[in-house]
Image 1: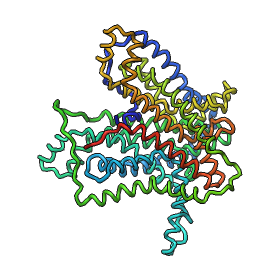
Image 2 (image 1 turned 90 degrees about the horizontal axis):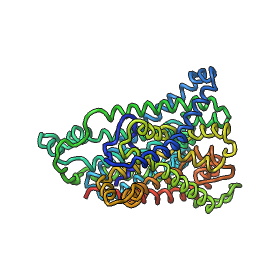
Image 3 (image 1 turned 45 degrees about the horizontal axis):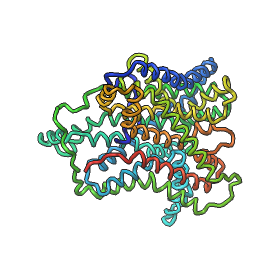
Image 4 (image 1 turned 180 degrees about the vertical axis):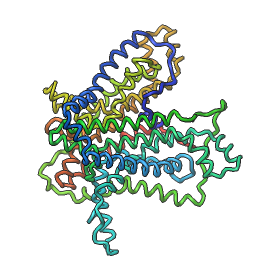
Length: 544
């Protein structure tokens, strides 16, 4: 299983699953549909209340939408998304090829270290970059003997782009590397036999086969850039999420709703473009024979440049943040008046993440069953609606749930159930994608054989389906757990008063300018996240 199999890199708008189990008990389908309807109803709450909030703004909301400031926010967000996505792609494609198809030394080690960049939250990376590359930072101190007294400020567009590029390029590496591992060697040999050199083979033979994976990875990166709050907030770049958070802090829910709906509209445009790109061309093997074994391509004189490239990526993405955190840890003093015990942070972070991951996994189960069994009509639309969490950034979900709670259920406002509901809506698609992928790899004849031996539908599910799908389900659970731990805007807005996690402690320490207090929770968060990623990666395949 590849990690890309458990990340929802395909968004079900017009497509359908190819794998359909031939027999499924009607009672099971009806029960799954009933539970799925309840789950989808919860998922749709943010969209409904965003529309209500935007409508309540009336003409003032329309005027605000077309103000020069709002248009600048749109331009800033699009520019940031385009720049970070392009930069991440230029890094990810060669990195994926080097760690999958070349004879690069220690390529497995390079891969794991490169993917480690995704376990460091964007807000933590941004905070460490301001210390490392900003005026009077670590880089400036190294250049001071050369006469460099002060480096230009990193905050703004450049800092936000650098941060998002570093934390998102693994999202492109994963699907592209998986596609490279499944390319048919015979097609490349055919290109070589026609006189194409290695670069021409890559451009004309391999790259077209990578289009679906590359499109999916770029889509995930673009969505991440649009929805990210931490990097743009730390770097003081006025993009959508920062503007929405400022309006929320000012209790201007009407203007925040207008901005949020505009952000949702932009993400829908991205999803539509992605869907159309996926429908173009044919990307599967034409022949019926077995695919040829993939052999590592010799790098020759390019081996040293390749090693320098991989080392540079990992140095900027992983080593620099860790160096800054260890520097702060070594110089840590008790100057912060608000000291939070590390044990309490671990208890709160791990506890709420585990509960949220378990609830999300249970909620995703009936939807994944419907999707894996070729759901049509109403069932297919329910599965599609469940993926709304991919469209809604965390800050948008949090804003909508605040409106929902304050207007209908004030008793749950700023409580753990509302916080977990926000997590569940945001990360439900991750669990659905992982569980459906696991179900899709089960031969339907196994279940048919169990039924023919007299097992009931529930017994078949418990004794055949679940054990076979266990790896994918657990990988999805771990992926949700990993993302919940790092989630910042949803936690900041929906958490109970006094409830602190790694993410909120890092943010408050940064906001209060006690940077030394960032080190301990930051390193703890990275350590737990890395352990979770290792669980997900344990069955990742590679070329021998």
